[in-house]
Image 1: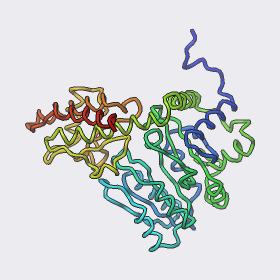
Image 2 (image 1 turned 90 degrees about the vertical axis):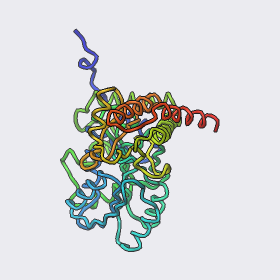
Image 3 (image 1 turned 90 degrees about the horizontal axis):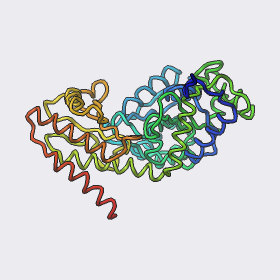
Image 4 (image 1 turned 180 degrees about the vertical axis):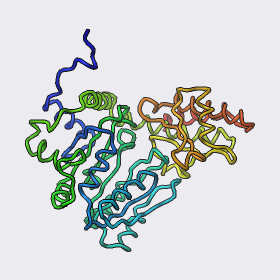
Length: 371
């Protein structure tokens, strides 16, 4: 008996290259695309280890847990690391980055997360990229959560290493990812004696064996199902229109913040300012005396399908995430999430206004249409 997931013809090099070309169009970039055969942590780590070393002075922007991880990798590579940490309820500013360069003029590498799904904030990459370009430093960007939810423009913003993954706003699997690489980044890697070679982390291996060879022969057997899923994700975005997909994510985020404020019960947006809130996920601060992870567990008991999660690590005590990305980038998912949270808060003796929250979601939709 044939099976559509098992009896597949081999994925040709031409098909693989065509998928990369579609990713490049999604990013509106002329840079090289390397499609990595693993979850996005693979190119995130590989890009840092390829481009950074003992001679690197890195400005590592921390607006959530991934920024902390990037700093660990950079230090492990031998780089001198200057951490620029801001509270997780806000975003970093271009002026803060400019001040860091003024204080540390030797900075030649900047690592930054675009949208932090884990903390619900998003950073102004276009403005930061302008500052980084002025100083001639290399800009590394984690756009895994933001791609599909908000503009990601490596060429226009001067991003040298831009990592994306399919598992968030693109609505795909976690097993495939990609990175766009500028000529400056390739030159930095080629000059780095510590850059991984003959390694699964190596970007230079892909350049030598795949890109420089005209993308005629794959260096190893591809993750076929994941590559086909990535292709399907891009096809769906192309069919719907990228602007429409991003608008759905923005609409869901605005609805979640408006609904949470109206719900009451001590629940409030974790990210203070609307302009700093990521369209991929809305984080909420649990009411005083309520453990966020327990509240989420109770909400999921009433409706297991809602896209709710508690914050990771220490944030599990205080942070709730409404993960309105991909197929859940809808007002219906937001409404269901708020209703489930309202039921959980009510069971804890807190006064909430679920109907008011749902009206706020609908009123927000009508105001967007009127605008």
